[in-house]
Image (cartoon, rainbow, N blue to C red; front, side, top):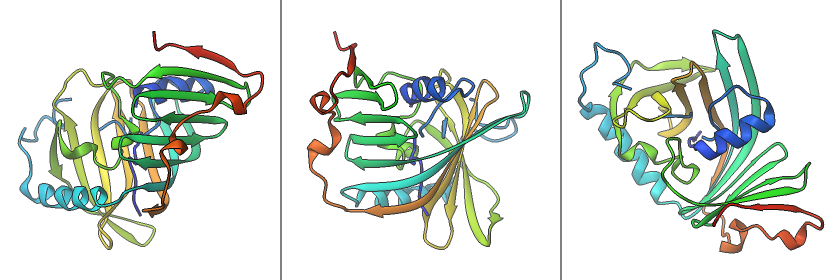
Length: 240
């Protein structure tokens, strides 16, 4: 199975909005699937050639898809506070455009602006799509490991009858909200099955892909929000 993302899959905007609305402790969605120093002090700050081969293969695979849709499970864990929350959702991608649906929240991006819509409250917040945050951009949930990380191939792990190759990534930008990511790659089909993000606040975020499809034709209009279809909607526009 694949994820990130997704995955992804998760970014900072998703964290602040989704977690506040769902009552999670501070973080992501999205995808911390947050990928500070290279995770452990005894690990060299150089890239692992074996990990690079695997990551290059993943990058080639996902870049070949014109569109991606993935169902995922998201889990937040914090050992100190004994927090454990679980949600599910979907993410649809087309280039820099994306649609994330999680519970009563939709996050839609047409590459230029982001709409965050609450179905229950019938309100939408509009923001510019500025890639200056310290979290993960959902549009890059399956390819975010391509730059900005030091990576090492860790030991394989088995779970549920499947074997996963595990790659640990640490961001070269020390201001990121997370200090380590772990990619779990299904050894059988060489796809991302799960991403685990280790946040500096002690939160662990896991995104697990539960279903995946690619190359479904989607018009660009799919990645826009039409307020006219929601009578009485409250609009907060932060683009100015």
